[in-house]
Picture 1 (cartoon, rainbow, N blue to C red):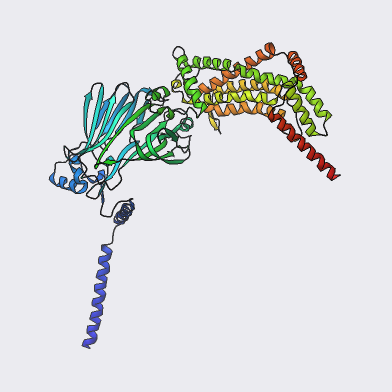
Picture 2 (picture 1 turned 135 degrees about the vertical axis):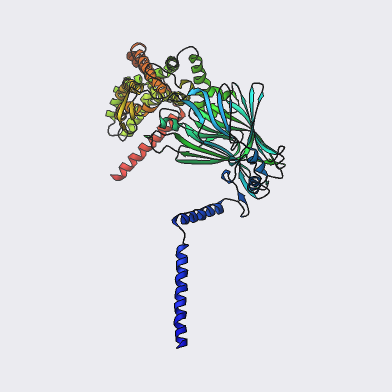
Length: 631
């Protein structure tokens, strides 16, 4: 009985102990807040393990790991354990900003990171008449990422620099030092000069050869989110891009995709361009490599967007004797060809004037001409005068083009007779048509060549007006800003590709181009022979006469009004020139008589014409042989 009783007591004891254990486990289970904290700690551990090229025994320190400007001995010990040699700078640093100005720039330097926290262009305002800021509210950062000899990875953007401001003649020198001691430091040195958007910038270290780990890469990272400054987000964003120079004078740019990236060797400068304003980092000696990225931040143009694009550049810094010594320059200012070109450092390539002959025409003809005219007349009048001068210089081309059309019109009855005579032999008709045109000196190609001559001028001007900084915020008649679209009416809705406003200059330009094409294509349609198996050129020209003005109306509604003004005046002048040529210069009777004289003269065929004739004859012989075989 005793054993049985003992067994029952043992069972009861085990049950009680198990119950107590379960109760204790239930009481000590983690709360939801503790579970979140544990999950966060796990995520942080995973992120820490993912850091590229960081050894497991390396400590990565951020600004949140320490308190600056402390004199507490325990805090100093804590700083030393987290920052190593750079604890000295954190203990003596201040969180205050450093403010300096020139006549052109107002700058603020953040002691945290030693870089600019604000760049204001004092002489410029945006479309809302607000000051132009290239840097403000943490939209930019400059960082040097490096390893230390005590197995740490540090980022200068997280560390505090000590500022010193001095005067050097008419220059202001800002020295930002990240100190290990009073004689050992990493320094950012900026020199700001009056009358200059460019400032000297040097990164150098002193006495850090035993602090910086030379076996690990030292990278300079520059990032910028570009502010919207113009009325049209899409128009400004089209000309907002990364431009860089590499390999001794070559230049390139990133595209307009959602995400664009590229790399280059021997990089001498990188520009974060914001249409009419730009931030440029230039090196006295090239960076070995450069990696660039551009992200489009405009997801919906209907939203009042603050930023347009996000740019980044990664550039390696080389060590010499364990020290950094890199001389550079910063440019913060207008994307103005005249200003950038004065530096003689190939910065004019930042302004998109076109490649090859198009850029040459803009640089050496249109920019000097427009600058000359703009010195003594309003810019709207300067556009009109420049347009008149260009059209007068190109009038001989229009004369040649119209003369060719007149010759083809005079020859049309004879050409129609040839086609009727050989209506069953298309090859023969084509041979005689070419022979007649050759003898008369009237070729359809003669009308095309003058038009091709005008294309370089047309394209150069298409590049010139969107890049002309002088037009920015200049008014003319009802237009408030010749560098942006003019608005005579706001629409309560948005039309795809057209917009939510009505611009008057594109309407006027469209009307002018319609009447111009009606004058030119009318004669072309009348003189253009229709050949079997070939497109009806007359019908195509008729379509183009209506399609081109409509395309002009929609496409230019959001473009610079200065460009629309040019096309309006250009087409008006072209109409006037054609009416003068048609009514007072060209005489169809004289042209007909001249053609008859030309037909009497023996005309030697060119090698090309002889070859074409031979090929057509061979084709005709093959065709006749095939017809015989079929019979």
